[in-house]
Image 1: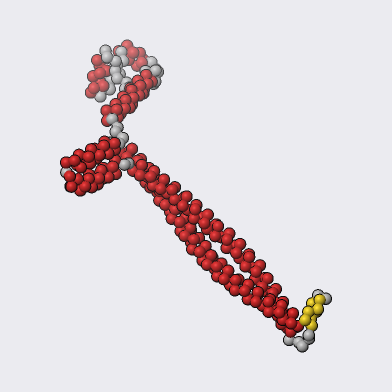
Image 2: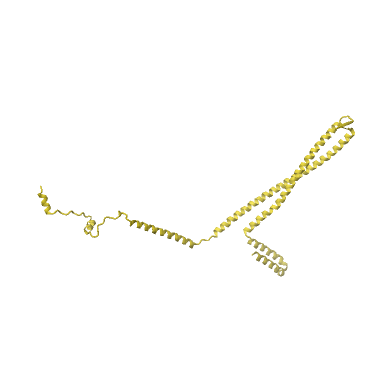
Length: 276
């Protein structure tokens, strides 16, 4: 698709320059704008996320160069601090020697002995003058170097703050990219769920299978119950109905009549009367 858009834009540009003449530039701008919009529409969100991730990774070389600069400046500051500390200690030693010579010259002695060597007053004064001039020069150099050290410290602190800010912003970008990735996965999951199409026919078929299975089990349970009734159970539920051929019994049962006992025979009555 992108290839077609670019090819079409090139064709329009060539044809426009030949046909439109002076207005070709205006048309080309419009075409270019339309091409850019069309290309942006064709770029997927996944591709844009990969591009952002690459842009974040491309920040690391610049951060690393800045980190190296800060490291070099930190080493320079430490080295200069050590050198200035040594020079300051040497100036303190020179100051003590100058004050010692000055104190000795306060006396009226014509000569002075230092480490078994005798020095004239003029020699001591000349040495003191030379020492003092060298001390002043070294002191001025030390002050300038201390100012340089202060400027280096300020630069180092500024670069360190800038580096810290860059690292914080870079980490913030990493977090934001991770959040974008999480949101993209959520959207993709939602799109996957929404795109699912369940076949209603298949669902109905499965539901019918379940219904048929329940029906079959009901039938088998009913058969088992019927077979249990036929296998020697006492028929306590049955009533003592009269036999089919007992018509009198049926009539007595129907009208709730009680059958009378048969009358005794005449011979049995006479026999019972003769008996004392």
